[in-house]
Image (cartoon, rainbow, N blue to C red; front, top):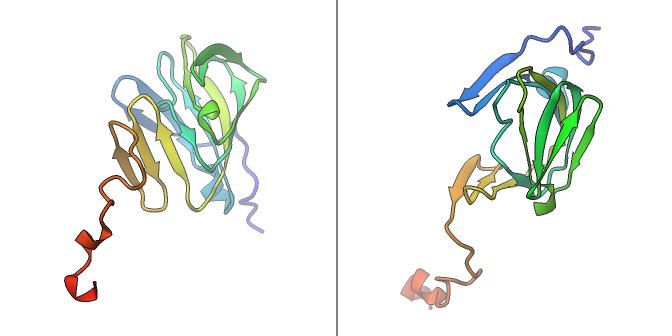
Length: 164
């Protein structure tokens, strides 16, 4: 047996993920390495004075963080609070589950990020009004909400006349 289903979080080779000056973390995609199909999980080390990711919430997936080392500020549904080692953070798949971590300290923050993995996940980013659709791996940005039938009032405009 190759025991790929067991990993020691203290012996992992983390990969740097940095986007500009505000997003800098290291992580390892444990779920794919261990053969998971329905759970996503990875260990994340968030560098000092940086954010974990853009503020977002999921429409399908639920997410759970376990803070393993350090302290950070959690932004959730427009509120802020400090979280620390031992805290378990659960985020619903709704606007109330919108979240983002900021490492306000001079030391790294290490946490386990666990998520359900729906085949068709939609993720919203309230600050930038973006929407990510996982199935097609595309990100969209909109300025405002629109009615479902906007610009669809006359479906005949989109059909060849020979069928009407």
